[in-house]
Image (tube, rainbow, N blue to C red; front, side, top):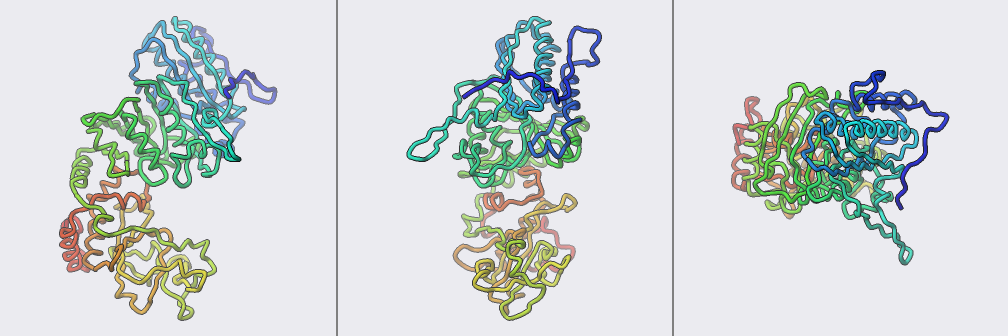
Length: 532
């Protein structure tokens, strides 16, 4: 059931500023500056630690202005939504744009959602300022503040035979939706996850739900502009949401920030972020997407590139991804990789994640091979170049795991594997780091342990040959694959899902690469790129 906020300011709160567009006495140049000051007033009495618990991150003024500038609608009657409004800076940025462009006689309806009762007075103050300023140039503006959860507000609950069933109320549609959504993980049994359960995989994050539901609430040809983490562009957790996005909306604009440190520096957020503009129209096969990049939130070193939309929103089978090429070189790499006809699964291989989670398996881990039931345990630090070396130790980590009835499911047969680091540091030259675990080097052990920060590629129904292992490893270590993964995801995590769906050359070419790599792998001058 929908309820609009009517409460004013409680006695314990800092009183928000007042703003008059026409008054010569106010200290603000525009509505964005006014709303930004509301954020500062709120933050004075709500420290970062409290805001993080709520996933609350306020948008810097220049980013708000940039986001508002991405909309293209010229309608006279406009319905606007901000599903996680905070102090209202994004709505203020839109209203500033209307004023600066002298968009007179607009009929504007604004709905905002904010369930933090402490921030509501500041939000109301911003919206009142927007209304007064728009009224002064002949525009009509009405607004409603909904002080409840955006997702649950649109979830209709039905109870039947003791079961709770959710359906979505999508009756109210919007022409423009703008948001910097909250960011925190949800339990998959949470009401929000249950309301959108057909799109949930694993542990979801609330920001992706805001994106999804907002997309569903767009009117025909409606537009949405969001700033979010880049993580939804790849990986298994967001696969269902991504598939809906790619098949339902058109991604017209994407903006990347090269630095992670500067975007939400006041909130101490270290995350790769992007801004996207999407339209509620069916994607066209010959469409174009404008991609822009800047170094920081001041939009320094700004560059643009127009690319085929098919190179951005990409599907292979049931897997859909959002790739972000930022150079002509990236486009060429994508063209090369997309031309490869095979995949791991088609070639008879599979990728899995190391089953040993150290803190869960602690009682089975050993410093050395204490007895005949102990076998080698491999970690990320055991990957040395293109080989796996068990002799390398680090920080007193266990080097072995003892096999017993409780731990027997945590080990794998000693075979040839391609082992990959699941995480790489920003300082590492390449995003993907693969090595060959040669079974001959550990032939006296029937089993080995692989720690959870490793992925490993193995053969489905037979044993992987060394030619296969070295071929796949050399291919994954090339600059081509490194650059492809940088376009695919911005984080330093290499997901098994992304490797599983990666296009690969034909089998005979992988074997030819493997033979050359085996012959040359001890040569310090050997270059995987030359082998390819």
